Length: 273
Picture 1 (tube, helix red, strand yellow):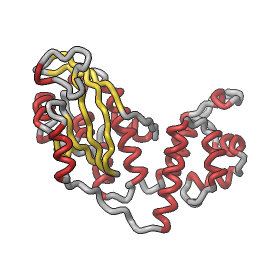
Picture 2 (cartoon, rainbow, N blue to C red):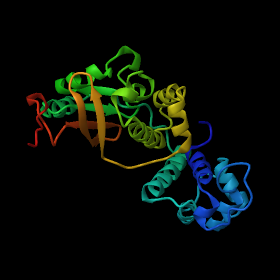
Picture 3 (cartoon, rainbow, N blue to C red):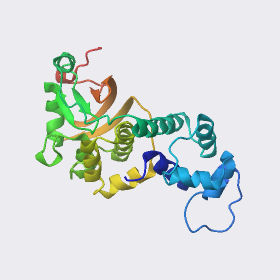
Picture 4 (spheres, one colour):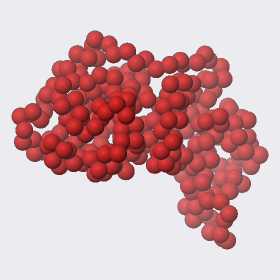
């Protein structure tokens, strides 16, 4: 993590592009995957030396025009373009502004009241490092049998996904959930890369190959909702629509809408029905 997120993102996205993706002939087999630095530089209209300085972290102030040209050359979608811009902004801010400091892990009375008011819909408060900071009784009733409160995962949703032995069996679309959690951590790290606790959490997760391979890819998505398919040890097969609310910069309220289309149990009624 010594190289900037901006530099690592450029390198990762270059490695994920093939010549045919940008209209270049495939040519002979390449020793390393992806486009060569010279090819991306030519597509972006910048010198290979300048792109090398960006990828090595020796230049930290690219212009808006250069960012746009690089986004075009790397075939970034709108979410990825926004992420690239965010990385550039925070790279410059770290050069000129004091550290943003550690995450705000305290749970305000208002935030707890919102989560409690959502009962009987399961809801919890998620921190920037995927720590579950607070929850209502219905969330605990649903999540505890899955192992999310086991001591081994320390109340952290990412650790549950990548470290708990039951996670891949209980969440049957586990790969999709793992992709989204990794992307969410990428977004947090782009904004709070000087947070030592967040850095330590990511280093801890990097011990797990399934996380590490996703982390290296620098893939980002933007979704406020996802459907999880869960083999629940008590309730059986359950479809959960997860909605994300962001009331604070580093805390999100996660609302789990359990079997909205087929709510059979009074304990799983939704507040909007």
